[in-house]
Amino acid sequence: MAGLRENIGRQILRRKLKGFSRETVVHNFETAKSAVIVFDTSAPNSFSAIKEFREFAEKNKVTCSVYGYVPQKEVPQEMLFWKNFFFVTKRNLNWYLKPSGETVDSFFSQDPDILIDFSQGLPLELQFLVQLSPARFKIGCYTEQQNDYDLMINLTQQDDMAYLSEQIRHYVSMLNPVN
Image 1 (cartoon, one colour):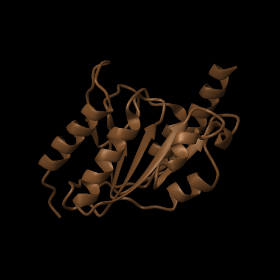
Image 2: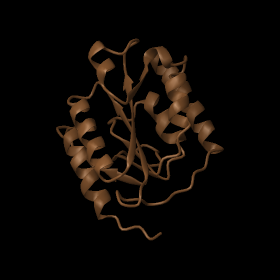
Image 3: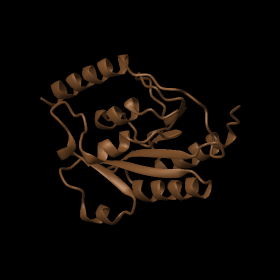
C-alpha cells in the first residue's frame, strides 16, 4: 500500500510542477538575505549540524528558518525545545504523503533567496516542500532523479550532515554572482 501511495503522490507532484515556475538567481552568503533549511530529523546528528549551519548563516546576516520532517505522528519531547525549528509530522500528511497544516502554510508564505535541502534520498514528504518552493537558489544532495536543485553536493553513504554542511559552506562561499 505504501508503494501505491508514494507513486500517486509522485504523479500529483509532477502534475503540480507542470504549472509551477520560479525565478532562478545564484546567491552566496553575502548576497542572500533569507534562507530556508529543510531536513529529515531521522538523519544521525541532524540537530547539531543544522543548528551550527543556521548560526553560520545568521553570522553572515542571512535570516534562517528551519523545517524538519519527523517520520512519526508526534514531535518527540526533546525536539519540542529546539528553538525556531518547525516540524511536519506524519499527522500532517494526506493519503498520498503531501504535507499540509499551519507549519506548511508558514513554509510557503516565505519567499527565500536560498533553500537548502539537507535530506538524503529525496523523501516524497519533503519533495513537496522543496520542489514547490519559490526559493531563487536551491541546494541539495546529488541525485540522478529529476529535481530542480541549482547546486548539488555529491555525498557517499558514509558522509553525514556535518560534512554536507561543510561542503555547502565551501561551495556557496565560492560563488560570485553578478547582480
